[in-house]
Image (cartoon, rainbow, N blue to C red; front, side, top):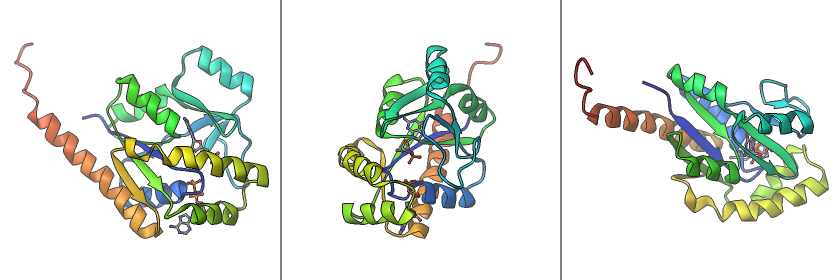
Length: 202
Ligand code: ADP
Ligand code: 5GP
């Protein structure tokens, strides 16, 4: 059986990376999809582990070559998910987590080409979101303003996701995310079992 695609979106600073890392300790056969981006690496981020950091011309060539399952401009930079690694992981039976923005989620939802479930991670409130963004210390003032403004629009999309996690405590949020992933596996297994078997010799 092929793996499941799990789309996770959140306003910047809501704690998505934190919950994903914690959930990956709780569930086996779960792979993080490494996106391509034209934004620069933050301190501690590694090429190939956190993102593939590429130039704008490199990214635009990948768009022209049709290499992306989805891509979008987010906070002034390009971000995209290459199709081939995802398909390979799913074919091996691994579940794949896509950490993508609301535009990317919409593209995959509308494409109708892949099975997925989607999860929106919200902060407890906007004041806490701002505190977390500032405490992380990775963005300059201009970027914080841009990310907070985008957060309002992103929060307006939360109802389009199948699951909502309010990240007030890391352990609880990670456990909820792990539960969603495990439940999706069970749902797919039941769904697959309900399919009529192909006639022999067909
Ligand atoms: P995102 O990936 O959504 O941009 P991060 O995972 O980088 O967000 O989290 C933003 C900041 O908030 C980090 O400093 C992280 O340690 C902190 N954080 C994440 N989850 C929580 C939480 N439940 N309570 C308090 N702080 C949190
Ligand atoms: P950050 O710069 O904080 O790592 O990410 C900014 C935003 O870009 C986040 O909302 C993140 O989910 C989104 N993002 C990361 N990778 C991709 C991707 O491949 N496609 C899309 N559409 N968004 C992405």
